[in-house]
Length: 599
Image (cartoon, rainbow, N blue to C red; front, side, top):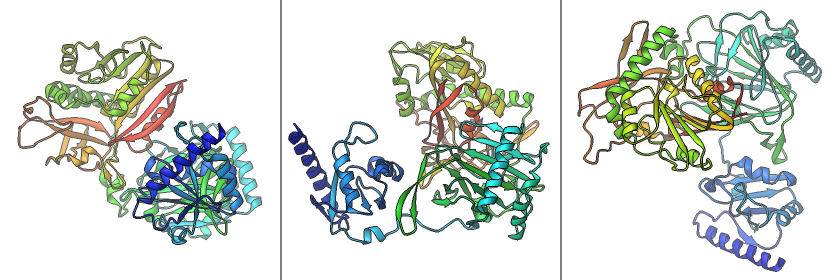
């Protein structure tokens, strides 16, 4: 039996290798061999079939003495170089044909390489260029100073009332509270200022020519925790953001908000990171939640950096005037006024720019909503026969017939859209998405697709999530979609940006607020906006492409209110609901999405 299995593995390897050798760009790879070497080719694992560097390195954690990992864009294979041949042999013997990849059905196949071209290992896969204005001072504090600061922050964590326990870390604020989700500061001073024990550290900042901070955020991480990519709001803080790392090394990710370029930088313990200018205003920064990082260590090569308990001290100076930076596209001081809606105004906006609008455009809107989104459909189909599905904000009910094996019911505020649903024999009811009429713990599955972004305040959006949690059974799941402010990820534009552009671009006045009118098919410049909907006659088959607008076909224009979500904002909002957890979060064609599970 063993010989039969070995022959099967050999046939698979031969087939994979033959396919790889057909690639004309494979000339650097060398020669496949049955003789051991320190270079192993993973012949069915690479970027093309969905693997990341971290996932590949995780496979080899038990054999961690690796010099390099080469993953090539658009290839279904990669190459691992071990420090010694014996580590490659051990990996080969234990993993080849028997270790299952991440989908737990496909084995990993390995082959030794000979005469590999060294240019492959000397070439750089990513740029070493750091964001402009970013500085890293290693050994900024001594071991003794680190111990004192860790002791201080641990004791403060136990005592201070401003400590908050987020899902992904424990946070303390001094001087002023940093508000995650919107990445702003509450300019009402806290009772607790920056501890006087930090004065020695602050004096070191002053020696470097930095301004004296008046706000401190302390983050406590355990291995596996992180923080979403974010940019501290321009209007809240001055130029310099200072972060001191205690207890553990970490890899911090930086993303250019304009180009989408990523840079990963290792922050050693006791180091001080200083973000100014472009790195402060134009780049987002964050930490990927995982228990180890992949780093290229001097004189060692590619290796695993296991995370330990880490504390970060982030110092800022609260801004007292509007930001005048040169990065105006990303500056909230210069691109938009902060709008705080009263309850009366919020009700009026939603009534005039959501509910009434959908009644006016219901027929046309329904013609554009004829195809379920694949990820939403997959979510619905994942539930067993007899489950109860509730669609909050069901529109024309296109998701209510995705599965005939479920009991499905929808809610919406538009009577005209509900008429469409009833004509299709769907079970629907008129209800506010914040206060559904169903009893507690009734739904196995809830979807709320492109609804919450029509609510004007954070509190109203939070009310909807709390009500969704109320209706879910224990262990039940919900899927939420909201429109993303980021309509372009790297070089890839969303379907919304790729469609025909409208020419509407002006400011729409409202009794107590000024709402900017968005120019269709362009990137969003504001969070709270009015989006034009232009009516025109339907096509001969009665269907119109989703979100189609033609400014010359029909004179009627209606405006819908949207709050577009920044990256991490939806997760932050979900973290405020006590009895749900984020099962997964993802980006889907211009939308930020979360799948929630009731605990």
